Length: 259
Figure 1 (cartoon, rainbow, N blue to C red):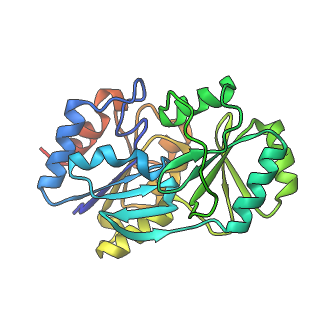
Figure 2: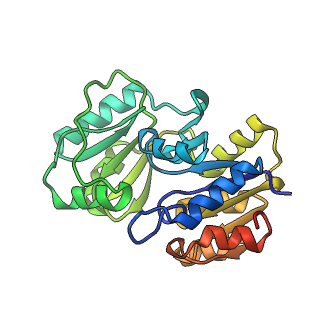
């Protein structure tokens, strides 16, 4: 029996075409909540770009690919980058004229490359942002994730300078930058399940991207969106319709989670 449903946001909950939330998907979420089934968003988005979904009755949010997990105002888990790493990486980015973003309780950047179309296009593609965010006011705050805006060739100098860091590319011009502490959606899901005392066999998950593969592998029932790539489709227990075709609703009905 499914007691919890994890959902990616962009391209899963929201349409892959225009990032809209369909009426059908919205109603399906509300049906899950009314049935007492936990709905948890698991996204690479920063926390402050997830608040709009609370109106659906979603209370638990996994942001920054698992670096910050909150249920209401309660912090279930957080993975904070070391102050030294944030400072040294920021200084190196400024020295090289590279743009980076900081996932804090909000979303800020270092103020470089504000008109570089590669950066602005990446912000639109990954987060739906149409304007360059504010410059970070202070590095003396908790930073959960850093993103480096650079292609593979440009990023090499960072790889050489910071060999102990892990760089995970999720867009042609954006990479997540992490320390030794492993951060992933499956690890985050495990922490949520432990907090709620739910077994992973009682969990269902939806996703469309490569950073969702481990999540779908982890839960009892993994659903890939029709707009997802080959790798996630091969990892899934079932491939549903595209997000723009109410794929979440289709799968929930197929597996009789809702009527």
